[in-house]
Amino acid sequence: MSYATIVLESAAGVARITLNRPERLNAVTAEMHVELRDALARVRAAPDTRVLVLAGAGRGFCAGQDLSERALQPGAPPLDLGAAIERDYKPLVLTLRSLPFPVIGAVQGVAAGAGANIALACDVVVAARSASFIQAFVRIGLMPDCGGTWVLPRLVGRARALGLTLLGEALSAEQAQEWGLIWRCVADTELAGVVEELAARLARAPTASLARIKQAINSSGECALEQQLDVERDLQRELGYTQDFREGVAAFLEKRAPHFLGR
Image 1 (cartoon, helix red, strand yellow):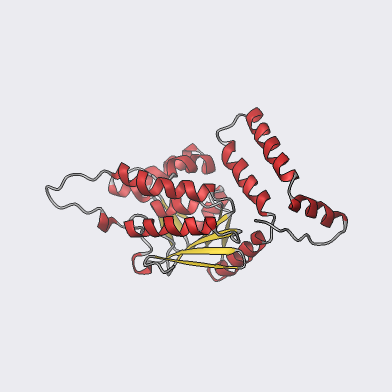
Image 2 (cartoon, helix red, strand yellow):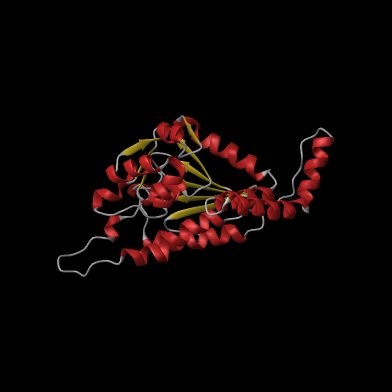
């Protein structure tokens, strides 16, 4: 399907969604939300999808919400931004986190506002050294959304989360890696190759295992230890019945590379 604001591609088990408004640093619009919902539904339903790469076209990942859609004329009634979150951003973040396969965020240039938090909703984030993450909401009199107030304290702690959000300063990719905000910072010239290699590696992995790892890690923040041990018990029981587990053990004992069937 052809889209106006994104590009959807798929090959060898790797789906790729590229935010495609480079002239606006891929700022998010209502139309982009509609297209992202459709593309993510297609990716999820495709039986051959084993990993998703989320990227941005041009020199930036995503500058956040396109504020031209938020401009108000004098005397106009105020906007209900909560409705936009409920309709668009909340489902987007929940979908990315619940997909039954890994999501790689490939970040170059700026990831600001909602764009930063969309990137952080991905499972594995790889950023070019020139990239920066900016919780820019305070600059226009707002607070972080798109899951920012949930994910930041869990990743970097309360003090750093408050510093990032109250001051709205840019965080370099190198600092983001050092703080544990992202998985890896690489040279700009290496970003595409590193992401493609990582995507291919995950596409060859046992996808049921990847899905349950993602599910268990995502649940751990809300579970006490005993509850999490129960989660691990139930999911491990399920994985023990899969053909990929049989293949993994056989390959280990036979000292060969495994061939996982996946989804």
